[in-house]
Amino acid sequence: MQAIERILSEVDRAADEIVQFTADLVRIPTVNPPGEAYEACARFLGEHLERRAFDVEYIVADGLAEHTARHPRVNVIGSRRGGPGPVVHLNGHIDVVPAGGGWTVDPFGGLVRDGKIFGRGVCDMKAGIAAAVFAAEAIERAGVTLPGTVEISGTVDEESGGFAGVAYLAECGRIAKGRTDFVIIPEPLNVDRICIGHRGVYWFEVTARGRIGHGSMPFLGVSAIDGMGRLLQAVREVLKPALASRRTAMPVVPPRARHATINVNGIDGGQPVGGIQTPCIADLCRAVFDRRFLIEEGFDATKKEIAELVARVAAEDAGATGVRFDVRDLMVVHPVKTPDDSPVIAAVDRAIRRVLERPAELVASPGTYDHKHVTRIGEIPHCIAYGPGELELAHQPDEYCRIDDLVNATKVIALSTLDLMGGGR
Ligand SMILES: [Zn+2]
Image (cartoon, rainbow, N blue to C red; front, side, top):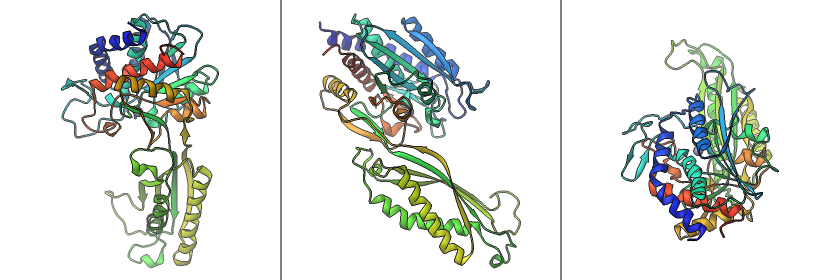
């Protein structure tokens, strides 16, 4: 049998082990926030890799505020060295979002039923971590010598920005140009799709300041809530139609996310609702906005457009009432895109054709993921996301991953890894 056939049949033979390993990961409730059980999960993954002859390192995010004694930020990396060929790094985040309500099964029970594994974080992205582990394992079991090095990492905090996780490893040079050639992140983008990047993110807070007065005589004060209302109206009537008219050339899914968008994350003004009330005109109102911008727009123009909109409402408002506005940046994530001719796209595409007998669909994420840190801090252009599980199930109640997707994705990752090292073609 050829190397590729042997690898594919080793993945099939390992199917029960892959399912078991995924369910074991799900049973470690690595909920973020606040970052529960990270160390237990990193050790579980690290000890498994050590038994499979990987060199294992644990890297804690020393110096970051979120790395505390109660909730340590522990990352793990395993390396298996073969020949002098390229280094292929498979990265998965170990954190999961809180279970939330609406579950009909135990979110941390690791239930296997009807060809699916259930649990919080199973598709986003513990099945992906299992796929990475068993992709490397299948190559080994098939008796194929690695022409290069395969690395598998489990990292923290992706759901909250990844600063103590992939960003930290990139900053300390552990996932970086010169050391790492290719990165595959097995996020759940559907088993036949390759994700080549994401839109940009601009989170900002707007503060409206008015003047307090007696609530029975609202004409004697300045309501910050009214001012914020006028800004929200301008966002709805002026900004949103402009954003909807812009469309990126990146293949963002779902299709409606190909446009620029804005969402109000939260609003807070006047007296706390539910508390004791006194008759006062609100002198303060704050809102946080989530603007997703396109690679074609860029951050500078995005920020300028917001500043101008706020300035215009403030100018109109000053005549009427005199509300003042301030804008404060909370977070900026620049868009990233894998180069069209990247070997990592070609290799994963070849593997998808081989395993699933259909061409890969190239997509871009509507959100953001650790790709940004790999590319912008690690300066590695050759990064994609590819993994088992359906994007739409991420963060939902009764989240699950289909076992046949998991097995197929494991095969695709195994063949891609070998291909990128120059083997198995
Ligand atoms: Zn994820």
